[in-house]
Image 1 (cartoon, one colour):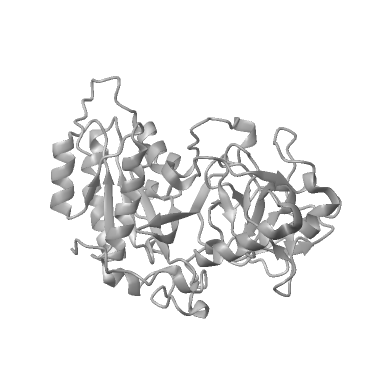
Image 2 (cartoon, rainbow over the protein chains, first blue to last red):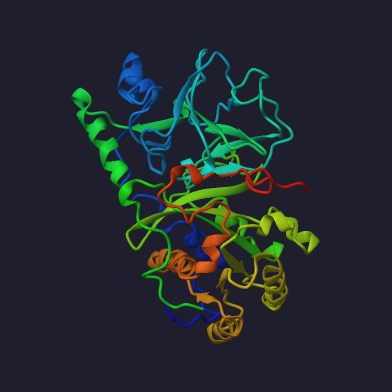
Length: 196
Length: 215
């Protein structure tokens, strides 16, 4: 760790390079995981991605960044609780890679910021208002904050509120560990994760 | 300062308790560009401007890091431009266990200003908080190291070309935090109770998650 740095040496990394390296490192998996989108599973999605074993509907497997090349792990199994609504909350941007928001969107409700494995929160956004019937609005005390991928900044994948603990992640703006036939792999994955 | 981390910190997650949470701050002169630590840092540059939400700015990120076989959740906070006012709000410092000080590659004065930041950190975080200095090319390695020694902090040399050091830098910071027991009693959460899920509550501190940028 003691390489001598010479200011005049053009081969030395820039400060931006150093910062970028400091912020990346092993936080992201070397090999992106095998994943599928919510819509790729079609009508199967609710049965293969949602676990009802714990009394509420929760994500059965791991949830990742929507960008396949990123692969950042967002939540572990059983972390998000499925909230089914008829409220499209997140802004749409045609330039984004996200699919259109369905008419009856569902969200993963995540109890605290530390329930995530990796996530980013924007600063409070004073310029955008979300529908009054959005999940969390009834108890919201502050402005909306958008969720973004902690590694590649893709977003918004969900929202939270200034001063609040809970967050909501749009099911169609994240990817899912590929379910294996019969669902055995998903069950196993839950068990493995609990041992971590 | 303790030098060994092998016996410090909470028990591992073997029984299923959630990983301990650590609050880290990024501090430095506003021109340093340290928000790039929180903002854009892809290897592949696969984002276009249109695709990012970066225009709003990042408040904080949660990242999970494995250190010595245990998982830790780091919340990494940027200064949200508040350093323009020279003094950060005390809520920003509250509960912080580690601070990463960054100074500018092209500005000698930002290095000299580190002393001021140290004073502020001592005031708000207390003396136990673990500090890590991120160096630049304008200040020689020896100079930066000497400064870090004088301040009793970690001095980290990171290279974009050797990511190993980068990861090690974060790991070392976490290890030093774990080796500093007083930090474990004043964290943002009661992380001394790894066996009891109920005590691990996040965000109930009014200065915690909701503070954001009020400027």
